[in-house]
Length: 291
Ligand SMILES: Cc1cc2nc3c(=O)[nH]c(=O)nc-3n(C[C@H](O)[C@H](O)[C@H](O)COP(=O)(O)OP(=O)(O)OC[C@H]3O[C@@H](n4cnc5c(N)ncnc54)[C@H](O)[C@@H]3O)c2cc1C
Image (tube, rainbow, N blue to C red; front, side, top):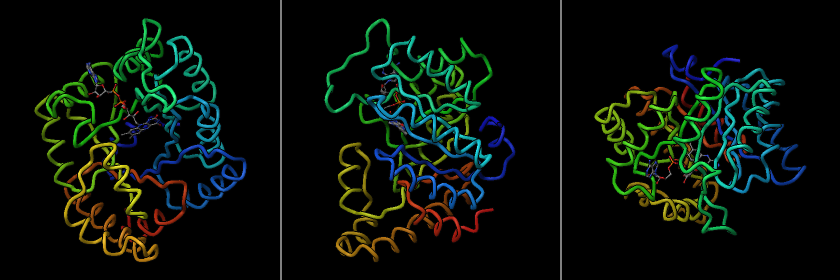
């Protein structure tokens, strides 16, 4: 399996999807069918998230392995430091390697809801940059390493400049590329790229795009994660928030326009947050006429 950075370096814009491990067996069966349908769109890689509590750790790896073994698409396994000791992380990474997975999205993760005050100790990692360093020190160049980026700054960052400096530390410690948090206004992404360049990060930053399918959920998520909702989004979606079909269609249109503008302005690819559903991801990719 290829490292994702090798794919990104081939210059064509990449297409990738994100899934999360379902909680039930039925959800897992549904996800298998969704993945089987979406791989027909020729994604360059597929990522699978990792739960804050670590409870679905094996599922993340099972799904990542299935994506590779069954569909021959490189998997990007998300991995968070939260709650895990360094030795537990070593075991997980060895498991990732033994399963033939070559790409890790190295994250700090958020504290689980039932342990909001958890603090790392000497046996844990503090930040994602420490996980990047650990991977580099112990596995050298074996893994491709992606990291999270926040065009509007991580909600706990003291400033946008500091946020960019913290991202640079992940690259100093071996990271290869970035996938961003969702954003709704492309100028936020373009400003982020400029800020990173000034800080010395010239890496590929893949925009993470969440198609809007439920306006109230979007507002809740954006409020929690301090993502601004531009007036144009409010104008489109607020009047139709109770009409699921109209929201879906408007969400597809908005995402297609957002992706087209990003690709026209040299974004290295598009990473779609699928929410484990075939649509609207399939519609969006087809409308983008991707390659
Ligand atoms: C693309 C993407 C995928 C994600 N996938 C998952 C997932 O699968 N599972 C999950 O639980 N969460 C996931 N998240 C959420 C992520 O774990 C949280 O946003 C988390 O709070 C930050 O993770 P990070 O890797 O950016 O952490 P870090 O880079 O460690 O940053 C965490 C905080 O610490 C600050 N910081 C960083 N370095 C320093 C330093 N040297 N000194 C002082 N402060 C510092 C940062 O500004 C930030 O506020 C994802 C986020 C994105 C964007």
